[in-house]
Image 1 (tube, rainbow, N blue to C red):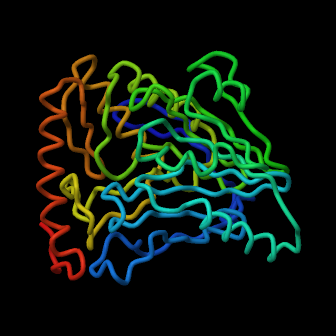
Image 2 (image 1 turned 135 degrees about the horizontal axis):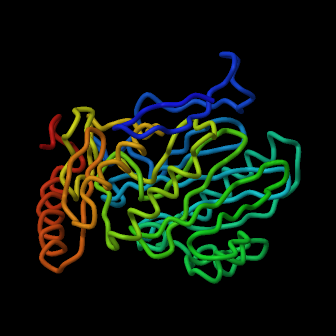
Length: 326
């Protein structure tokens, strides 16, 4: 471990003694993701990326829904776990079945139980719940505090840390309300990936409960302190590659978007910014994300207006998007 100073505060950060991979199961992320074009006739509804042979990242096309969320499918020896069911109404369950079937063939197995759970309960993450909630062989965990506590052994919400063993694969579960009352982050010990849902990602961090969001950010800092973190992978990209510059809400096509992965340094920067703001909610752009309080109807109406204008404009050219959507 090493002591690292950040904005005058000393943090303990995990370090490996040798550059030998530190025992972390490696994986690869793409250079770029499909977004929503430029030609929607050519775009599949779902993009699947193999991080490694036991962890897959699914991204929904912007041609289907402007939110373009990321979903995560994690395989253990005894159980597979799908985080979120995406936005919109198109078919997901069949697509997930196909990915699982290919994994089973690869492993020479006949079946594996599936758990479906959620990073949080906003509609762009639960839209296809009905495709899974009553299926035989599927353990469905709704985005409700009692259900999440029971499934992951979280004794006291939101201060206790839960966990689940998928079979030689332990996932730690960290409650992180503030964006949504039932937000959770996942830490996969095998890959050292931390999945913070919509609380940390390259884009607009919508805050609906300022005090809870600040406490949850500190909880993530405390949890990750002393732990190896390979990447922080959220559920959206809204930021461009240019620092402090985002795509407008409602964008279905983002040809120059930021990479998905962030670092623990980004989490520390967010935490320090929140401390400096104190108890005063304020929109603040950081290099790779924006703190975006949504605490009144005027802000919600502004968002809806901007979303409708942007999405309407881009839908008109969705089968041949211009090179720049700005």
